[in-house]
Amino acid sequence: MTTLSRPIPVVLRPTTPRRSRSWRLLGYLALAAASAGVLLPFYWMVMSSLKTNNDVFTLPVEWIAADPVWSNYADIWAKSDMTTWLGNTVLLSATVTFLQVFTGSFAAYGFAKIRFPGRDALFLAYIGTLAVPWQSYMVPQFVMMSKLQLTDTLWSIVALQAFGALGVFMMKQFYETVPDELLDAARIDGMSEYGIYRRIMLPLSAPALASLALITLVTTWNDYLGPLLYLRSPDLWTIQLGLKSFISQYNAEHALIMTGSVLSVLPIVVIFLAGQRYFVEGIATTGLKG
Amino acid sequence: MSAARARWRTTAVGLSFLLPNFLGFLILTLVPVVLLFYYGFTEWDVFGGATWSGLDNFRRMWGDASFWTALGNTGYYAVFHIPLTLAVSLGLALLLNRKLRGVGFFRTVAFFPYITSVVAIAQIWNMLFSPGFGPVNEVLRWLGVANPPGWTTSADASMPAVILVGTWRDMGYYMLLFLAGLQTIPGQLYEAARVDGANAWQRFRAVTLPGLRPTTFFITVLLTIGSFKVFDLILVMTDGGPGQSTLVLSQYIYKKGFQENEFGYASAVSIVLFAICFLVTVVQFVVNKRGSS
Image (cartoon, rainbow over all chains, first blue to last red; front, side):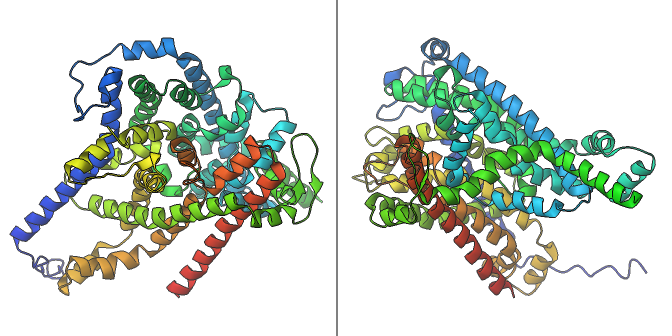
């Protein structure tokens, strides 16, 4: 019976092998061109960071630094406040990520698994503001921040990034996939809601938490506008703000500027490569960015 | 009695979960969004408080040439950035959806621009676009272009330069969304089309495009809002220049609000930006509903 019901194989490829081979070749060519298009600017950045300043712009372009100037990577620390900038950025990224992951998943549990009046209206407010561009309310937000006396403190950036609707939305999506029966069983066993959140939901949602943490970390590290609006004192500057001021101050030091750029990008690339799977999954499931 | 108490308890527990996040969200997002619609109708500089001025800000905007320039430039950016990014990211997704070696490598690589900070991106491209000695123009000259454009240093070519970099930065992100959409199309549909003798182009028209409809709609909405609020890339790459050739709405809000301290007028311009994004989204939803029914 089973053998009889198997479908008769149909010839699915009317195209000749030769034609399909040329299609494959075309595909590889396109793939190579696209990779080059994405990678060449990065390659150029790294190569320029290893040149002397006069060799960055030459005709014809020197695609390989013949005599790599590694000292650029030592000089940049002396010429700029890189240490302060990186320190502030690491501190902010860690704090914001922790708060976003904690408050976001905590609130998401309330939204997803506890029924109470007014819950859905509150969630609608969250979703509604996701569609409002930040650029359109940055002015009144600045006014609120001044009233709270947070401007020109690192707290302003924490406040700005840590309570985003994105984390709540992402975690709620995930928590809704956890069956209610599991939680009801725990409730019957006398576990409190806080216990369920901590002992059942948090361990279950480790991959989703990792996605959220990575996305928040990268966003906070790369944020330029928040620090630009709120951080005036140079000792509070983040790497993005510092790099931008370095570029304006030493606008002819092309090689050193590229050295600074490499240093600002490198930690994120390493983190991205390490947690790529979570990062990509997080983007693909929510399709949202900050 | 005890049922009411239990319900009260559940509500209290539920609210306690929301509270830490909601407090921050309320003060820093919800209240500012609501206040925007008050500030936009006030006259306000840093020294005095807000005084109600009715439609004065909007009347002023009507006669403000810089506002119209910013609005026009934002439209210019959107009109080219949206279709270009749609086409490129769909093309890349189709390419990655084929069984080729090296596809995983490219999926990783394509994400690099998206996770790189805008300051670094703008700086790299400004140097690549450098008119005299930059690699871009050198390649163009090698290809036989006698007078390559001045890119970010010329009023005509600065917007195209920004649009190209914007697409380069965003394409990996939207490619990923398209790829997720492509994987929801059942393989049998393609096989059925093949049996019917459809060629690659016909399969794309008859199977891929209709199957991607919801994804394409979602991406178009995201891309449209993203284009109308474009800000940091332009701020760092050209600072709106040369002249006002790349001045966009978000940057005009920034300029009025944070550099000239005109909170009232900046809020009024913000309302316009908000209204545009809102209207565009509503129109797209309506069109999508009509198209799919």
